[in-house]
Length: 392
Image (cartoon, rainbow, N blue to C red; front, top):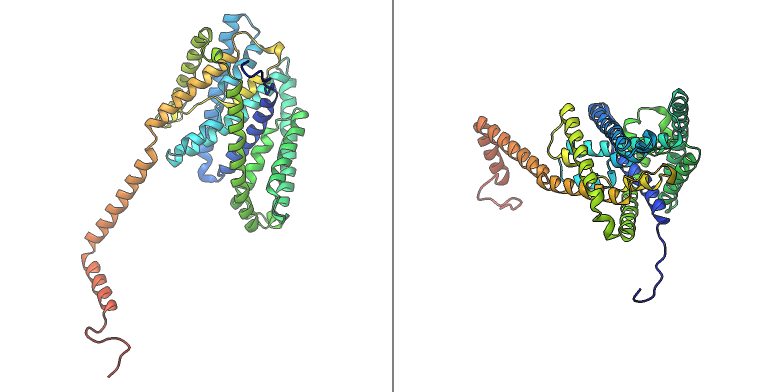
């Protein structure tokens, strides 16, 4: 090296930043979600929109890897899952200029895709064989994590409402990460706890009718939750930026320009958006710009890093992961650029319709409008020529 400097090996820090970023991303996304009767249709479409393509693309890629490379189906599936998860870390910030309905769909879909992808990945990684016993154990784990989530959410909400110290949001976040880590050690689907906690404190207005929640002083807790949400957004941005900076630092040019994996990367991206087009068509959702919003990113890298050496296959390597991420992000970038003024166009249409309705109302009631103008003139000048408040 030119300056004879020994660069430290920072690859061990990447999974730590990735896991912390994943927790904060899911927490941020769940705090943004609204749970009420009017959202049930959107939630249902988002859930199946996240689950359907995830399963279809995972099994399809696993079958292709198995047939082409001669690997076991389980190892092929474990390596395929990271390539099939939508990255909420990239998708959510990229749809700020879309219409409210499309933005909500992307928030729900990408957050659920992260959770379902991690749960599916861990399920396959921890079960050598898939059968009734493995599904029964998984159901038990779901029940346990739901109970833990309910108790922990009550405890954390109580702390959030009762603590009066000026430093209280960071300890809440650290406790959340601690509960996640303990749940993960015991092989529980820990991201479900993050989702339940975020949904619970983010939708206190829907729970105010329950007498049980009176102890939390929901009026005060709502203000604290708003501050907590702002801090979570800032922390998520910081960790996410550090992750991608470190990931970029560890990249090599040869990995990005590897021509042997480029054909596979292009094929995977084409399959991804083909299945997404089919899913949007069946869900009766607008193709543009939702078709393009299916990026791979932080969650893909994180899951790939968690694959043990004995489960890795030769076809899925670092070059393929990087190329799929770059190509999917480029497709999303150009797609969102084409539809970036959608929100502005809708606002202009709404403003034009409001002006038209006001003009129509004025035309239909000219006498009333004239009377209003006359009364307004009289109020401004009740006695012309005489100064008010001055006598003789």
